[in-house]
Image (cartoon, rainbow over all chains, first blue to last red; front, side, top):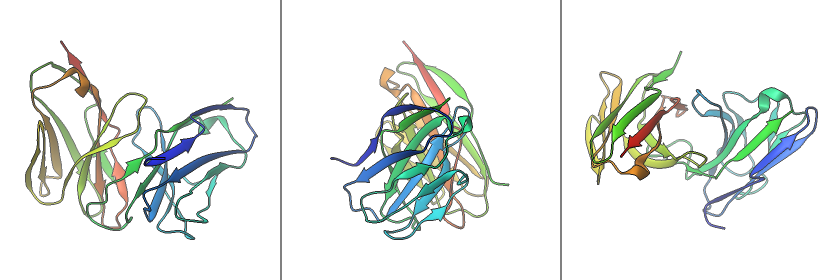
Amino acid sequence: IAGITQAPTSQILAAGRRMTLRCTQDMRHNAMYWYRQDLGLGLRLIHYSNTAGTTGKGEVPDGYSVSRANTDDFPLTLASAVPSQTSVYFCASSDSRVSGANVLTFGAGSRLTVL
Amino acid sequence: GQNIDQPTEMTATEGAIVQINCTYQTSGFNGLFWYQQHAGEAPTFLSYNVLDGLEEKGRFSSFLSRSKGYSYLLLKELQMKDSASYLCAVYDSNYQLIWGAGTKLIIKP
């Protein structure tokens, strides 16, 4: 593993199903993030975690949940998927969420289609 | 509300220079980032500006004017591999990162 690994790469899901997107980093970064990217819109923050054991809500948290049991893993769960959750999901990490030159490292993304 | 504006799409010629503008209105300012995103790939960090002026890094330079709420990314000696989307993002006073929708840059031979 080098950087951030996301799985699955892509998934087609029936509405109403539960889905967990996995994210693992090997850089020992404290902060982790989940974004969604939709055509014509900027990246929108779903949830974040400043450090292991803590999580926070971003701009568009409804319908999503996260956990941060350890430093490396930050899974995103859709409890009951809806078509509006069709998007590309990016996991990212950084040394610290609250600092100046806080450069984010992104995973390759998970493309999710909800039918 | 908080807002970042960038042109949706730009076209330039291989070997030329292109300037991608970004204007922002945010609650405070703690730095501005430029990221590059090739189609179907993850964004990757290009530059960070927190003070006014020009930061140069090889063929890429980034400029910031905090008083005008304005930044630009300057790409010189354009190469075909520079075809990508360029994302502007600003840290507000609460260290919330606000993203622009990105500028798709098309390079023609």
